Image (tube, rainbow, N blue to C red; front, side, top):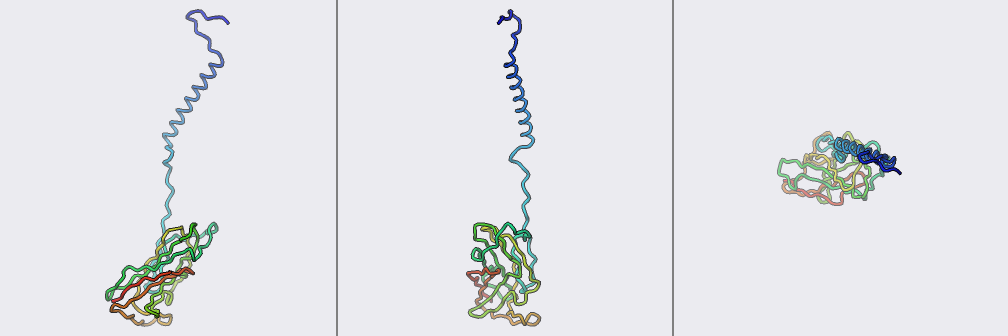
Length: 212
């Protein structure tokens, strides 16, 4: 192999030339990638829309309990029906004692205590609120309930779904008194208990309150 004369440029071998082209190409790819990352900014994707729970309509006083707030779902094919043993139903009051003329607001909550989401009918057709004192039943929400409806909803584990409150008129209820005058219940510090039911799931405890 001949040695180039002093001052004469050294010829670049084909292998070196190919390596230089490869380095230049990689540098160009790196620049393009950096520009794309600056524009796109990974990790800042548009957040998915959050579903808004639909509030249930508040029924007429003492006629029906309200529908809990989970959003009704039409397609439940990928879920199993909730087992009543995995549902915790609680009666809910807005106070523990009510002075004369103050109407108690009654409601309930339901919670899926299982490990997976499931569907359940939480509609007014499945709900029942009951007021008792001693061995006597004074009021049942289904006695004069109108416009019953089924509302199948997906219950997520550990989420408490409350119902809208129902105002109790402090009167006895019976199916044969829906269109007439009802008798006022005893007051003056009388003690009452509220229990709740949704389908086959029944509250294991009652909520006590006093009427004055």
